[in-house]
Length: 444
Image (cartoon, rainbow, N blue to C red):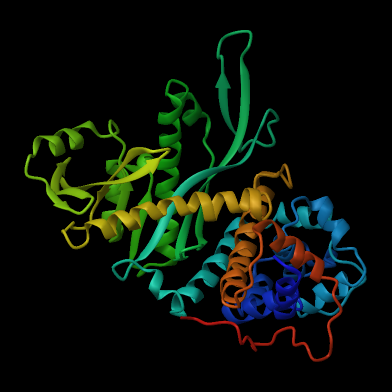
């Protein structure tokens, strides 16, 4: 970017955090009110900071992309930031923002369900606002499900850690401890996906004993399938009438997952890997009269344990170093496949990768680090993760409705740092912290 373009960009965005606040106020206007309404687990005789002040501090930690709690205390103690953040939260200014220790002690007591309610209420508002209707497929919302690790190491942080043994029964045996979460993300745009529900994977002793004889893939499938039952229940309870198409990888190509989708009235497009359900592949290959449409091949009505399932195969060809390379993809779906919609279903199914790219990779490498252990306490770890999801939702809206809508190009790694830098910027009397004047924003 040349000097002239850089000057134009900075003129368009004079104060990044103020623009972010405006986006948040427009699309998540009740966020801080919902923070305040969470059930306070503390003895009220000994509280110095309110719920919304503690959670608001964590919210802006996520907006700034600050990784550790120690760094948060250091950065938020800078001159000008304390006053501004209290103003952003609509609170009377205090001498200091909450210290990291104070916040962690609070998060160790707060029920994670309280933050999930806040998160889901904000997502419900986005769905009701109709600004993202173009992201739907067949007038239904794409929900991507996948698991990720939020901690991995040789130290057992808490009793909720899962275990993975290497060289078991030998002198070189090693144990890796990890904390996993099964995440459901709602597709709101090509580069915008937000968390709609989270389920933390915690196995008891009986689970661990049973899984000890499984392969790594079978153990992972067992863990995530059990968590999916709980996760799907959360989504159905919070969004009972939401029309859903579930996108998932081959770990979820199973009768229990498909049965849950049917019971909930959801459609599904699940990646199929050869060998995961041999009977389906065998029947598919036995049928010679497969229907074709462009690069898609499909068969409807394959019997799977008494229920029909449709199979779609899609391929693409590319020239790599002068050689033509063919790549194939396969899905199992409940959607009736036709020549008109076959390639469209394949396109929707391939959006499952968004949870890796715009989801986990973004939150681990570009806009913070959800894998950094901000606390060893199991409940606090969950709350740190949930707050990161809420912050990231608002930051994505800021990127989508202000940066992209205004033609302002930034490297992902610079977005958080420039937001943090603007936290200490002096606010003029003409600037409205909670204003709705957003000329660059379009909902189309």
